[in-house]
Length: 373
Image (cartoon, rainbow, N blue to C red; front, side, top):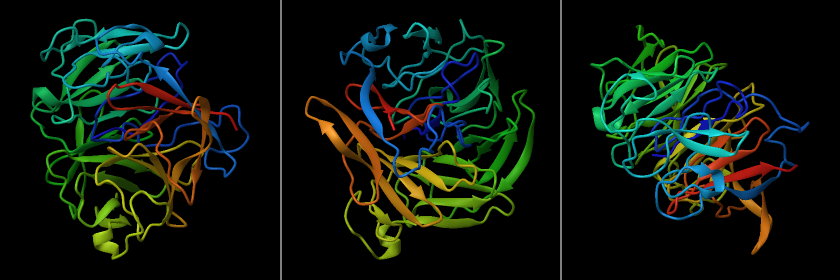
């Protein structure tokens, strides 16, 4: 399952993107800042230009300048990211000053804690999923190590080391971090564990598992203002998206499937929540400039699109190509009426200026949607 991520500034010393085919939204809170634009990303006049950002489109494993990276090397480019592609077990870093990327950890497969330069990881792929989340300051990145029994591991960018947390808690179903740096880890029985970077834990809320999370778990997005944890999972029966109340763990359906709503206006068509028809696998995140947590974004695997849910109006909008294409840069917007296939295979991640990046499938190129208005 793809990831939907927040990017807390590519130029910051500890800026971090968490990346890869993860089951969890890799940062639950809203990204900060409007960048150089006076209007928010959800403004009706917001526009983005779609452009290739990384990879040369050739199979291989080659570091270097962003547009020369080879197949499996490009991911959601940041200070730390997992390259896309089946079974890769390395961690890479992108330096925006030089526009180059290179491997920084996981030089051999295994399970070894210690300095990032010699730590070993098991790897991840589409079948053996991995969940991930970042702390708000970007210092800590948490992920489940798929080929090491899904144990929870933590990268500390300040100390430049990898540690295994909760060695006996395997098979976690989702991860999301709050504004205080606490990690919420969902166990298969619905119990959330609250985990600190030192490994100390306390029991969180036990939630109602009204949807079967299967073996792949859920993508999570945290609404701290309203005390909600939103989720989506593979092959949901009644709701593509729902939330759990953090106080009592109760389940609340949000975006119904056609089987639940009894309505179906066709695949990927924007409009009211009732009648929406989406691919039944995806990811979630909140975006920037949204202190009320009104707009929730979802990418759907195999869809080549991205959607924005208005949780107040209960409508869903889709990325649409407004102009360009066929040799000219495509300009995209969120439309309440039309869906266009764009270079978002299943998820995207926000940048500080309101731009966002995504990856596509075969080859795993990274695309940037540069905000231009």
